[in-house]
Length: 320
Image (cartoon, rainbow, N blue to C red; front, top):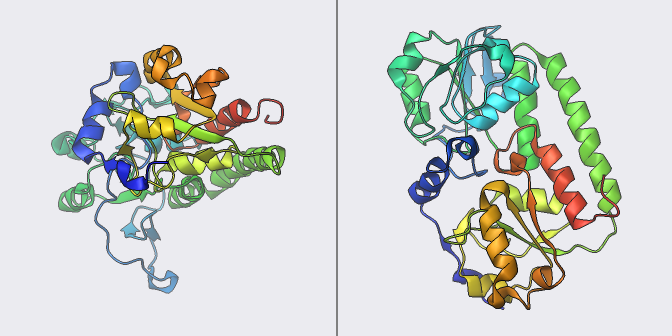
């Protein structure tokens, strides 16, 4: 078996360039955890918070209005979270790669994940910016501070952190009851998956983030956690980088029993099924190469549906 160092870290600009160069429909997705978290100070203790202050997903102290009504979201999972809370009518701006809900109306596009248009954002007079560790530039915190605008950062490194982000953001928005209701539903569904896959054999899963070059989830990737939740074990979970490139030979040598990928890699999945080099891989030999939905690559509330779908593929007779 090839050692973990057969994987090398894919540079952040290249991975984001891959994401942002996809066709428009596919561009409205992100690969969980692709961006380095924005620079933050040390987490504040609870007693250090004054009225009107909250802590975001990175422990940063953020001073925001009691009831923010004009919100700009700077990453797809931030927009998805606002929408799932039923607060889409508060959106006045979204990133170019977001899918605002219908109730948001004709919101303004404010630029890319790495290059938001600061002048456009300023002109929208937002009460709050919402960014994410999944996709946004590390300099975002400093840029928001320079504008004098509060920025709440969602940390999306694991499934639990996605759920914690929903709780924290809903409370910051003065809508804690909405957050509790949404979380109760999401956690009940995750618990149902846990019960259905508990005690079952855990197949070895290869998730293809990108086909050429082959990009896979490593130990620090959101997808690795999601695969575990769905009742499988990622064959690349020992790679130290979040999203390393992998040689085809190294992936084949891991002998995955199930191969999963998302819709925009469908053509790669088809080629892999027919490639003689992969013929001896258990997943290919047994016809267990599957294309799943895109919820798993934009870590927001919809990831629970993604985990449910992935669990159906990993344990077809036992998952909901």
